[in-house]
Length: 162
Image (tube, rainbow, N blue to C red; front, side):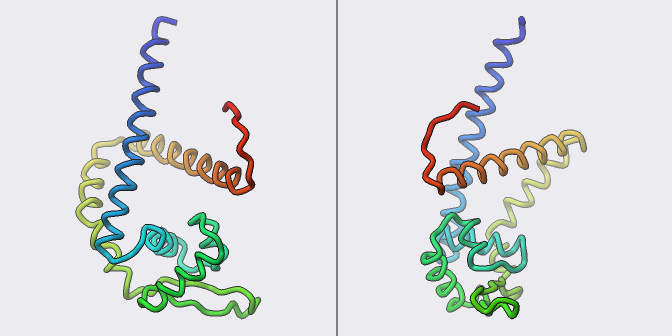
């Protein structure tokens, strides 16, 4: 039990560092979006499409936490700007498949290049076990975010303890 105060302090430090990283990540995303002449939602959509290739407008709405109406407007704007293509799904003509135009990918990656280089240098010093711990941590955090977004989207505002 003698290490309980140290553990509590380490947990508090981890939570503070996580909040600050999250805040700085958002500030960074706003700066990148502004530099590209996009909104943060536009950038989130394009990043999602870069990861998955193609997605339906409904999937984009789900991953960006936007209404279908807002996604429709955003996709129209991104299509007019030449970032994405949107085509009817041949299997279900009611659905639209959105794809990031490959020729625009490099342009979207450019503002992140210096950060990515610095991140690579940072993780070079981590062991495989440390990297796997970080991957597991981020996987769990993503699942928690998705669960909370689902809960918020359903109108459930009840406070529950973990």
